[in-house]
Image (cartoon, rainbow, N blue to C red; front, top):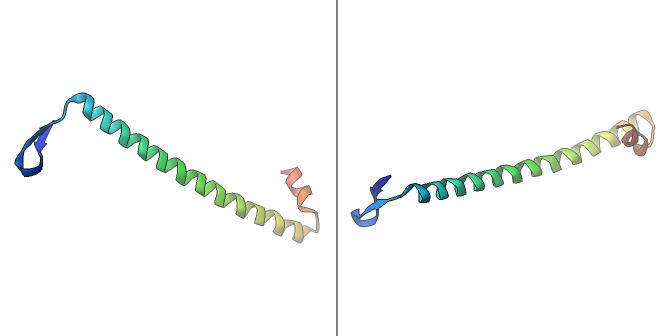
Length: 70
């Protein structure tokens, strides 16, 4: 791959350099996706706890019993 660099100089990228750069980009994207997935799981866990507490009050049973039942 070739292109124009700074001040009009020609930059040539060999296959090895291209693969390293694209691999690093994919690794970065995968780590960002992983972080956002973990964050969304943590948020859904707290809403699940709230649902269990609400159901425990509604049906007048201990939260621990509902958690044990699944």
